[in-house]
Every structure is written in structure tokens, then in C-alpha cells.
Length: 324
Image 1 (spheres, rainbow, N blue to C red):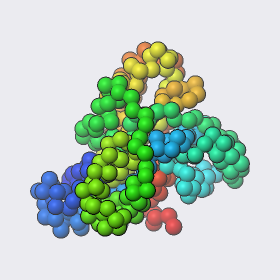
Image 2: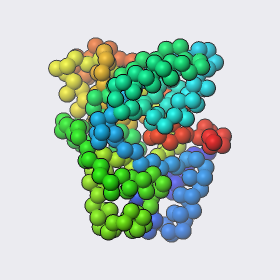
Image 3: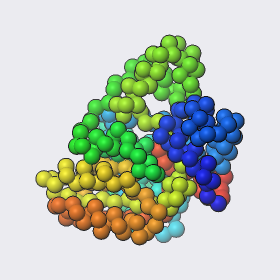
Image 4: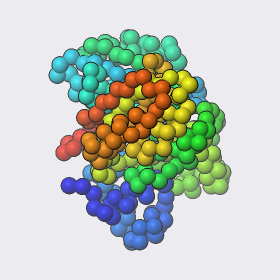
């Protein structure tokens, strides 16, 4: 059973402004504040609505964001995906079609740490046959930049315009304390955060604005795309010639279906995720924007069969209790 029209409007409003006060949401939706509170609580209890506040350590500390493809022994994909989703380093874990049974994103503080994690731990997991690794050099779009109605965020417009943003804001002690409060409760008010960390409310508001607008932290209200009418999720990699890369990225960023977009190392310089209402709509992405990219030498597309973790938060499987 899908979301009601009111529930859909509510989660879309939350995706656009995860920390919006209940009164603001109620006014936007033309509903009673108590109705909004009850609906949000129900969606959270059902595992449909989750929140996350993710620090972009690759921007603030020079950490590596790695994209992994993992081949598993027969019958072991679920167990391996569960083990990966349990790890604090992983942000995203999913089982997909293709020769790699699992795709994942994780962050590590240095190349040596990534080597140790892959060679000493992941390749030694029961059921793992092989691991392929790519490192993200640049993030253009994240899940926070996808809108089911196609509204463009600042980051998406910058990507379309070809504006490059690499560095985030540096985190000081007070910023770290604010992030810690958000980690406990994304929707904690600025007043409560200020009381907790010992700062003035306006100072907290100013710091939050700086951290989010710079992409240093990503604050999200997340709902599985299928709940919003987009049951088909795909992961793609593209081999694009260097002289055509900038134009390709700007063209791809303009596609509302794209939920994430990276420049990565390896033979495939572009990696992304997209969501669609049908397989026919996915084919339209291939026949249209992909076909129009000059210098495209190769394309690999995988359909996501099940996501185990999104934005650093475990995903509840349909009809199942949340993982302990």
C-alpha cells in the first residue's frame, strides 16, 4: 500500500526542508499541526521515513569516498550485504543485477586505510569472491538533490552551470558539537542545540547554514523512491573522454531522474544513480541523454534489487522489522 496524497506531500516537503518546524509544514500543507505530527510519527514507526546528518569527511578532512563493486559466492549476497550495512564506514549498500552482486559506498581517512579495509577485511568476509574499487574525485549531486517533482536544488543548478565546488567548511569544536546534536536528532531545534552546546541560538543557526550550504554536512529526510512512485533504481557508470567530461556532467545534472552523480577514478570516469517510474523510463534515459553524450565510449547499467543502507542509515526490508 503506497502513500496517501497527504503523506506524499508531507515527505516531499520534508525532503526539501528536513528541519522545517511542524507549524511551517502544517501551514504549507494546509493541515492541522497535530495531523502533521501524527503522520510523521507513523511514517517513522513504519520505517518509511528516516533522517540522517552526514558529514562530508572527504571535503573537511581529505578522506576518501570509495565506490565498491563486490562479487559474491552463490547464495551469499544477502549475508554479505547485511555485514557491509553493519559497518560504520559504509554509507550505501545494495544488491544489484550484473556481475557484481553488491555495490557499496564507504569513507576512509587515507589510501592506506582503504587498502587495509579492502584487502584485510572485506576480501576476507565469508562469501566474498572479489572486490573492485573506485575513488570519488568529485561529488556533483547527492540524494539530497533529488526531488520527485523535479525542483532543482542549488547544488544541482551549480552542476548544470559547470560550477566546481571542492572544499567544504572546516569543522571546529563548536561545529562538531552541533553535528553531534544533529546525529542524535536531525530535527532538534536551533534553540535546543544552542542550549546543549552552549552557544547562542543565532550562532547555531548561522553555523548550520554555513555547514549545509557549503556541502560540509548533508541533512536529509529520506523516503525510499518506490514509495514516491519511482520503483526502478539504477546505478550506471560511463566511460567518457576527458575532453567531453565537462559537457557530459552538465547534461546529466539536468536530468531530474538522477539521484547522485560522481566523477570517479578508473576506466569509467562517471558514476551515478537514477530513479524511474518504470523500466521504459530508464530506457528513455539511455536512448536520450546517454546517447547524446559526445565521447561516450562505454556504458554499464545495473538495476538495484534491494537497498540495505542509504545515507548511512539501515533500510528496513518490506514487511520486516528494523535490523537490531
